[in-house]
Every structure is written in C-alpha cells, then in structure tokens.
Amino acid sequence: MQVQKLKQLLNDLEPAIADIINQPGSPRAAYEPISYILSLGGKRIRPAMVLAAYKLYNDEYTEEVYKVAQAVEMFHNFTLLHDDIMDNSPLRRGQETVHIKWDDATAILSGDLLQIEVYEKLAEVGNVEILKLFNAMARELCEGQMNDMQFEKMDIVSNEGYLDMIRQKTAVLLGFSLQAGAILGGASKEDGKKLYDLGISIGLGFQLMDDYLDSFGETAKVGKRIGGDILEKKKTYLWNEMWSRLDDNERQEILKSYS
Image (spheres, rainbow, N blue to C red):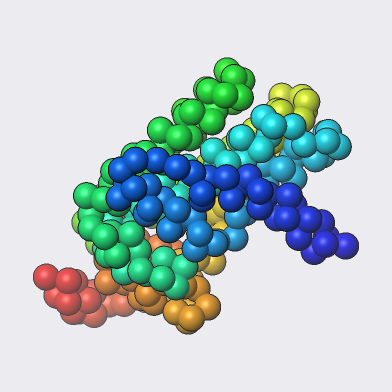
C-alpha cells in the first residue's frame, strides 16, 4: 500500500516536473543544461515530500503546492550543478555532469538561472512564512557546503562536526520540503516543526548511506564515480572510523598520498 502511495505521489509530480524541463528561454545554451539535468531523472524525493506533507492536511492539491514542489526540485538541481564543479564530479545519475558535457562557466550560469526561477516560483506562491523558511534553509545549505570544503583541508573532524555539516548540506532541504508542504496544507506550527525534524532525520540517514555507497557502491547502481569522497579527502563517518584505527605511521602514509 505504501509503495502504491509513493508511486501515486511521483505520478502526481510528473506534469509539474515536465513544465520545468520543457521551459523556453534564450539563449538556449544557458537553458539546455537545465533541461538536461532535470531530464536525467533522479528520485524526486524532495518534491514528493512536499506533496506528501501537504496530503496529511488537505486532500486536493493546489497550484501553490505544485509550485513549491517545483521550486524544491529546481533548487536541489541548482545545488548539484555547482556541487559537481566543486567536487570535480564526472558523473551524475549515470551521465556526464553539466560542467563536463559543457564547461564550468555554463554550469555556473545555468545553476544561477535555476536559482532565479526558484525565487520566481516562490514569489508566485506569495507565502511570506515559506519564503523566510526557504531563505534560512538556503543559507544553512551554503554554510554546510563551505564546511564540507573546509573539512577537506583537515586531517580529521569530530563525528559531531561531520553530522552538523551533513545536517546543513543535505538534511535541511528535506526538512524544509516536509515543513513547507505541511504549512500549505494548513498544519499547525507545532506539526510543521515536527515534520521538519522528521525531514532532518531522514536527511541524515540519507547522507550517511550516500557516503557509504560512495566507497562501496557500484557506479551502474548509484550513477556516480565510486571513491570520489576518498579522492577529494572528504571527511565522512567512514574516514573518521578508518582514522581511529590507524597508528601514527599509517596516518602519515595516508596523508602522503594526498601531497
């Protein structure tokens, strides 16, 4: 039954996603990468969470909830366009990343356009509370990404520091997705906060598994280069666990490989 409900949510999303994939715009060189990355698919978890939370309080979807779902998916893909440059990732969803297929400048500008369209969608919704929550979330996400990059320069970070970083970098967007859907559906502030916290927990679990699959997954299944986190000296729970089991000589050997 739950699988059927999820499939129905994803089916409900498709027209809204198709609208942003097929959007017009000029010059086409700036908009083709947007259509490209959105057409690669993905799990659509975040916009589905918007609709799922809304459905808890309201049976009929409105134009506003679809716009927020679109905004969430566009914002997620905006972060991927820029993140792939920063991580020098060659693959996304099993295909070439935008900065590889085109170039870095195109990926940056296409990402910027996606972010502008996010704010256009949210402006059309006209809900000040959701806009404020979105801005707070976006700020945290950028701060988390910067922490992730700074951690690459360190030999070790605490597990608490790592968890706070992935909360910002990954989990806050899932928390916002549930909270925004609930607000549009008419939820109380208390319920909205509880759903936000649920999204945070889901996001933490998602990122922990993603970090594991980066080292032990299969490219054909996860759709990206395996071992990217190791090559980029990312600080993950796996790195911390490895580091705790090494003696000083072994640690120095590991660090030499990055010099």
